[in-house]
Length: 290
Ligand code: G1P
Image (tube, rainbow, N blue to C red; front, side):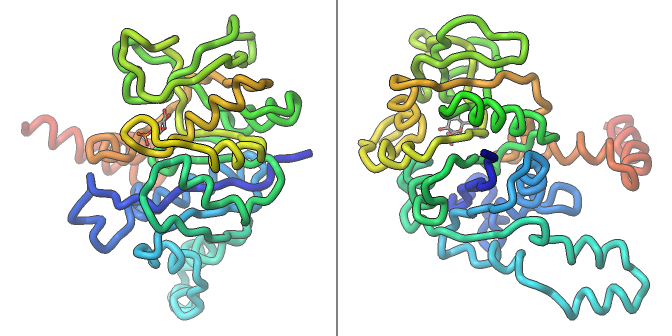
């Protein structure tokens, strides 16, 4: 068995990026010259995924437009000898099948994943939150392997200072973390008060889920923030077991807020093969002049 399908919840309104997100969905905001959504898809493809289900809102048709073929633009690029960028344009959506599901009301992450039920079907699948960039496919690939070998759901984990836990889902580990970063999960709690948090291991936006999650989602009642929380559905699975977390000290960027997004763009631009050197020189000058 292999995990072949990934769900990307992308129906959010992106209010933290208004007015930019009035016309451009936040998932299409550029990380240098690539939409954040493309980087998420690349990460999934690198972990063996070949079917992406985007849970979109009907008010964001430009997400579908991004995957439409653009033969005129490609022909112009070819004519002017810009074959490298023409190839990149052609590659969009080529390695993967892209499907869409729709979330018509913003009822929470659990609800968003539930909207993908019919398209996903009865098989394990990954969920990637597009507000978080991971820099590589390594974590997701390791999580898929644990799901296949254990037969249970898996969450991506990161260790944070204990005072930072209340913005996240937090796990109660069943025991020690093994040499591969794998740990059993007894329970999870969404956005606990610091004093009530069962550990300092937070759930980052990567999940590999067995399809019984959809029944748990269908039974959800409003949780933290009045939303239908994915964490509360995971909790049902964790109590049944097997359920694991995979801990990695990944290079994770939270692009869901303007400062995090800026940090990601700057750090990735400094590493960029073409723009890195001139951008570094510019940044040095800007900081000197401050
Ligand atoms: C969501 C999840 C939370 C998880 C977080 C990771 O929260 O509900 O469990 O820890 O993503 O970023 P949100 O960021 O949507 O509030």
